[in-house]
Image (tube, rainbow over all chains, first blue to last red; front, side, top):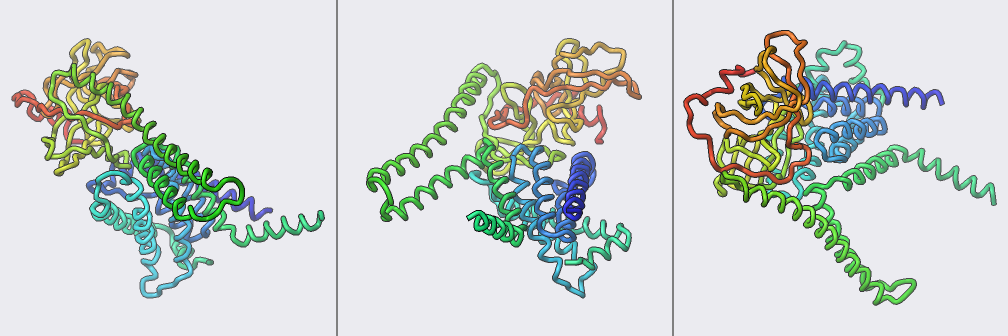
Length: 173
Length: 288
């Protein structure tokens, strides 16, 4: 019972963190960190990190909640929620796989893969029934965004105290 | 009997516990799908149609199977008919709404003095810092960069990028959007720019001692380099004089609801090259 309460508490804190990150994304990141039309997705980074550390249930639940927050902005309810739920669910599967040579870059690489996965789902759904070329959108927006997310995740890991990064490398899963 | 049910429930709970993460995933995906269904946009309509088509094909595939109860042939025919009617119903509902909107737009186009081209919004970029929409008109229809985009309610934005069949329109709610504007009642000039609020912009450049009132209508100015004059932008919703600097902090509620844009008009006439209009926006407000 205590464990469940603790898990709920962790999820609540993470949801509040997601809301804060979403606010930062809207107020600062989209405005000041945009490179052309490409912006990093802070919530995606959080979901990948949480999925990596806490597992599929926490990852997908947070993914759904955070996705809903983003859906409120674009007025297409369920789209981000769906994509980010999948990302939150899939990201923990990389946690058990150790790649020694690129250990320092492992989580950023996972972020890259998850970012691509997210956009593989997102753009076709967003362009359904329209004459837009989804491949060009992937090339123009999805790929640079994934690179941006990867770089940002790497920078964040560098800035975090070593204990936190160790925790990522020594994932208990 | 009771203990059997208890065992069954316990076994079910154990199975749920064993596959908890998949159950959670399934529940969240179903919830997302339900949410997706609540949207009324072209993507969802397209998806619904595809589901009906797939369901009809699926139904045909298993059509040879006998029904457990009732008259096979009649039930089968009625189900197919029901499916077809449901599909038509979705299409008709969509057409009805479109019809109402288009009638409204046609009336507007008839009484509007400038040459306009109706266009449909086929995509909107999700990032609120890069607020833009993609239209189903392009160079093949005569659309060019900097053409103004409006609705019957007012200014929507301007064309920033154009391909043969599509055009990207930068919205008034984009972070880098600036337009020279004036107050209809007093003719005071200023610059309209987005301040980060939904369907709200700022009107900058009016000195604190000048006359502005809540309810004043803001129009595009004659001095703009890219925008034709007298398009409605919005109405003054709030004025704050308690800020640093010499200018008022004016909040303007836009006439256009940018969350529900589906059809717009591209104004095919362009700004006449007035020397006074050159670089007005940039000189007035810098390039922040």
